[in-house]
Structures are given as C-alpha cells and as structure tokens.
Amino acid sequence: MNKEIDKLIKLKLEEKPPKEYFENYRRNLESKLAGVTAPGKINGSYNLLPRFSFVFNGVLLALLIFLGGLIYAQNQQIKSLQFTQEETQNSIYKYLSSLRMRIESEMSADKTGGNVQTPLIYNRIGQVNKKRSADSQFTEFLGYYYKFYGANPLEIGRNSSDIFVRSPESDRFLMGQKLEKSEENDVKLVLSAKIKTFEEGGFSYE
Amino acid sequence: MPIAREDFALVKKVKSGDKNAFCELVEKYKERVYFVAYRMTSNHADADDLSQEAFIKAYQSIGSFREKSSFFTWLYRITINITINHLKKFGRNRPFELDENIRIANDPDSPEKTAQRRELHEQITKAINSLPPKERAVVELAILEDLPHKQVAQILGCMEKTVSWRLFRARKKLKEKLSLYV
Image 1: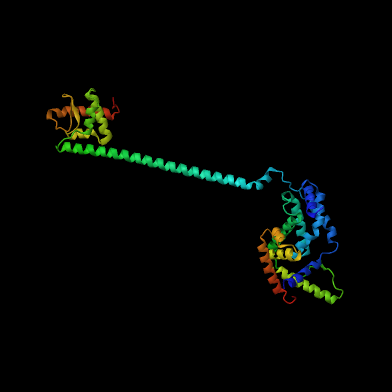
Image 2: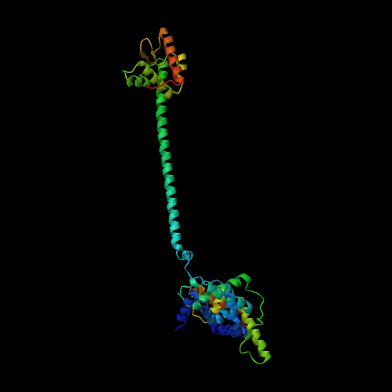
C-alpha cells in the first residue's frame, strides 16, 4: 500500500521548470551575490562568543550564585549583630531597672520608717573611698542618684527629710534618717547649692 | 575524488574568499535545491526565490559550516528551514493550480491524455499542499528524494522515530486524499 502511494507521489518528479531556467540560474544568483558581503570566516573575536557562550554562561551563573551567597551571609551577620545588640540593650535595661527598683524600694522603706537597709548608693559612696573628702563623695552620690533614679533630687530635698545628704556640721552621711530640726535647714542649704552647681553643668566626678 | 571531499575542498576555498568556488557548488546543486523548494511550495516563482535565498544564506554563513556532515546535507537543511518558514509565514493552503511555468516531462502526445495527466498532478500537489510543512518536508526527503531516515533526521534536526511518525501520518493523509487514484 505504501509503495502504491509512494509511486503516485513520485509523479511529482516529472514536474520540471522551463528548459532555459537553469541556464540563467547562476547568472541571476551571481548578480545577487555581488551585493552580499564576503562569507563570514570565523576570525573575529565576536564569533568566539557563541562557541564559548556556555563558558561565559557558567561563569556568569557562578558569579551570581557567589554574589547571592555573599548578600545572604551579610544579611545573616547583620541580623545576628542586631540580635546581639538587642540582647545587650535588654540586659542593660534589666540591670538598670532592677537597680532602680532596688533604690526605690530602699527609699520607700526609709520614708515609712521601716527597717533600714544600707542603700546601694550609700554603700557605693561609702565604699568608694574613705579617704576622699565628703564633698567629693556627695558629688558622686548626686551623680549616681541622678543617673539611676532619674528624678530631681532637689524636690526630694525640699519636701522630705528622708534624704541622702551629708550634714555639713557633722560631716557624716545621713541615710534615710529623720533629720533633726536644727540640721534640716543646713542640709537644705547645702543640697540646694550642690544641685544648682549640678544643673549649671559644673558637676563633675573626681 | 569522492563527492564529499570534493565539496570540502571547494568549501575551504570559499572560506578563504574564492567566490568562484562557491559558484561551482551552486552549479552542482542548483537543481536539487530548486526542486526541494518547488516540491514543497508547488510554485515556480517561490521556489526560485527560496532556492536563491538558500544559496545566499549558505554563502554568508559558510564560515560556521564545521564539515561534520556533507555540504549537501547542510545546504538541504538551510533550504528546508527557509521553505518551512516561508510556508508558515504565507500559509500552506493557497488555492492551487499547476503552475503555468511548470511542464510535465514525458508528456503524452494526445491532448486528452495530457489533460488527464495534468489533472492527476494537480490532485497530487493539492494533497501534498494540505499537509503541514514539517510532514511535507518528510515526504519530500524520504519519498521523493529517497533519502534514508537517518539522513532525513539529520537534515531536519530531529530523531529518526519522529521522521517515521511524520511519514506514517503523511502517508495516511495522502491515501485518504488520493484514494481515487491508489
């Protein structure tokens, strides 16, 4: 069956162009070829591109993967740094909060006349240097107080006698003790003077 | 000198800038290239344009011919691709009458028989023209050129199994169209 159909189709082979057609073929083609540039012999560097395109593609791909990896690694590093920073901030915040709470609780215990523990600040001042003058220790106390408590010590000094100040006469620390009436005015005066110095920027640690 | 070697020698000359060597190749293959284009388009003017276009394209890109196949296989491939593109672009089902410029060899003397013969050719051409371009190319190469499937696959850039399948489908369609004559 295939042979029959093939035989029929092969009748197409009998179809021919005009006799003179192929005689003029070459001439016609030559006239067209005259306008065509010389055959592209592969010499130019640009022709190397297709031949080695797979190499260039590979290199490009590797470069992209490397860059992607680099960016990813950098992001991870930044994230870990941010995490560490947050952790540090959190621990500092926790430490400061606990410190503040401790100071506050000690302060309130003093105010209510409860069992007075040695306050942290006093401890620190007391332990810092016994040789230092009381004045410089008071200055440091104010610094700590201001730094950790965040309130204006002047207010406390004015409204309450339960404050941590040094009496100028006795040259001792008064830690949450109720001041004698006679001492109160002296204390307030000294405190006001110190706070004023502090607010004017003259406050300094020794 | 075997044909392939002779062709390769000419190709080398063309690559080194010898235009006459290319003209020798044209002289050698002009008819085969023309007929490939003609049998696929069934139009003399189209076949003329397409065959010349194929030669020009071969001349321009001969630098990329790596001599892994014969020059003729390479040239066939160019011609088939150009013709398939042409068919895709301008449609394959144009109304058909046997081209006036085409003569049928061994025409019988009697006018009546001549007319019958022409009609048969028109029916065959119509049947072939109804095929998709790729099946038409397989019919041209495997039936009319009688090339082995392996070479057809090489020219069309596909697998041998694809060639067989396309040929099977093409034959089936042609049998249906030409059932009166088979």
